Length: 400
Image 1 (tube, helix red, strand yellow):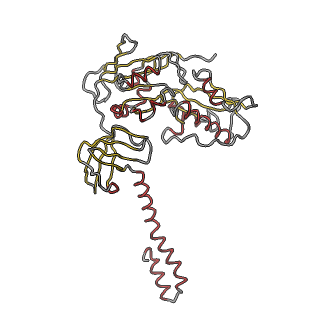
Image 2 (image 1 turned 30 degrees about the horizontal axis):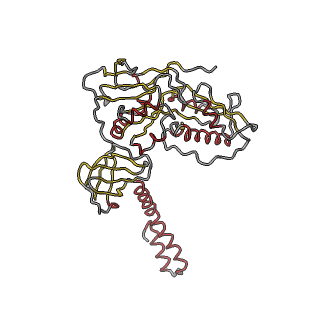
Image 3 (image 1 turned 90 degrees about the vertical axis):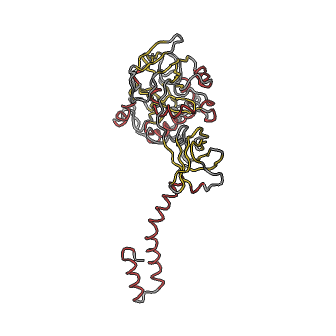
């Protein structure tokens, strides 16, 4: 009642005989003004608490932590448990289920099975990078055809790594990369990388499952659904290629400013990404945020669309079949899906300059980088993009 002087004004009105029925609404408004900021603060705290990691089970040196945001939990993350600001346990995530539930092996302290979990605070921390002497890395062999990128010939490019290596060819077609600087280095990268090249992606998957590889890099869309499943025990990371993207739109001679068409193109490429590429592509505008699912199809204003995919892409025919699966022989309007052989770093400036047309969807190419749970923290710290760019395409197939 005394907030901001309003309470004194109300009391003065009451002393001068203001009717209770007239004062009551004013009292209510004053109370709302007082408590609304507190209610908003309470709502914000509740939302933060709801999104924070929390323990859902404990016992036998292990706890299970759940988190609402999928993807925030990852193997190798450190977990600290506090009760009234006092640390009572600490451990490491050893396995993640469905992206929202993590199994944590406790290295110190304990959490009682009958503890009040709602009173415990869970803090996630990135583990310090542990020195690794050797990493065994699998890469696509030269000429291994995938949906993208157009890369008939490739070579190992150690310059993509933050540490200088000298390369030694191996009898099986692979290579041994040995650190050129043998002195103590601040770089966490291993002293040795043993690289194997695989002409068949199935052989690479088998080698990973047998434990013959620590890290396996695939072209976009290659890994099987079984290997992508978290239940397989492998962590799926993705690294953007330094060059290359897909863009859909009208021919350059017909710049398109139709918002309805742009929405249809975005939906089509989102479906292509989800169903044919397993989510390995990434919208240019979503590189710093969450990637949305395709959602419902927008209205087909302006008739059916027939997609023509850049012949430079090895998977052009498969992509066309998917995009045109509902077209049949109906009269259609032509749309093109092009491959942009440009540095990813320049895409933002090109988009800003309108190089792709009005609101044309642009998707960056990302390579799946798979590793065992025990190596996930190391690979994440070293950077999935470093592994994805170990190969450089030196001669792509030209469009006829």
